[in-house]
Length: 403
Image 1 (cartoon, rainbow, N blue to C red):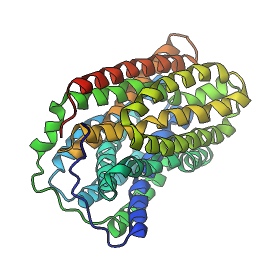
Image 2: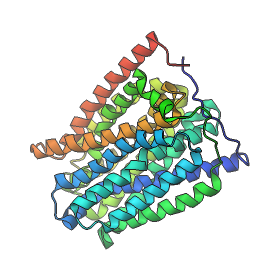
Image 3: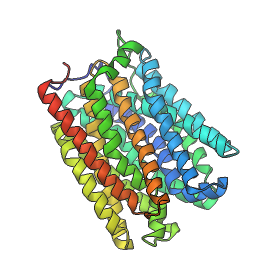
Image 4: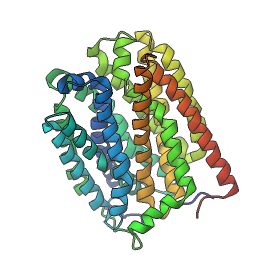
């Protein structure tokens, strides 16, 4: 039996208008996070030149951020369990803003690696508490929609923020990315303070209660679905700049357009994914994972021509984002008494996928298999993720989720 998380619903001051402003404020935080996470991939060449490092080392900066997310998501979500959710969101966004500003002044590769790790720490915990706040403001049957709207900030960043930041970095210096993100973070702080309703912490909230989510097999299986199934998305996206310029022969000046098309696909996939997750969480996962595999195989062929490359980046972006709202909802269902930690674990999982994808993609490139090889690795990962999902569904049939 699927259960409804104990989210301690807040009481908005106004109806639909206040709900919209609260969700937009939460989504703005996701917008800033998306800009800092994904623009690094489009500016990889500039980072290499600016720090005098090679492509694998530049990829490690992306992996360092992802590692920060993985460590910070469960740690900060658990530590902040007894805080009012609004206050936790504000603290996490302040941390995020300051950490990104330190990346602007990082003088060398070592300090940049450390600052990127620090910037990743609040990422997952922020999305986790933001998703819980959003889900608490709507009826249980609309949780997938509310979560997808919060995640829309992340996907819209790939349409507007990431292309702009990529252009800004190419034209005026890649370090300006971190100033831009810091400013977005400070604007988000103001919006969160003004529009997000206060929610008292659950009376039984504690670090121990939140960490109890980690005792559940279905939580770990959902995490594994995200890590393995979504790894191919990042294996492909991490090296998109090199693939588009070296394989598709698209001029570097057109990369912001490529990133924008990828982002448009993510926005469409996120919206559709939220709607279909409200109908069937596991059904969505079962259908989306093989769809990702097919899209990545087609990508490996289509990127050899500019016109088809533009089309397929939209398709791959959409296919990957279909999965996120379903995974987020699955984790909430699997651990209803520890929603903040469970929700944050989705982003920990996706950033392990980020690190795994970047690593495996760089590995096959280093082996001389070419820039299309990461997409084929990603297709295999998506099928493996489907296998984990089927196992999770089989076990749920034998032992329903907790009530």
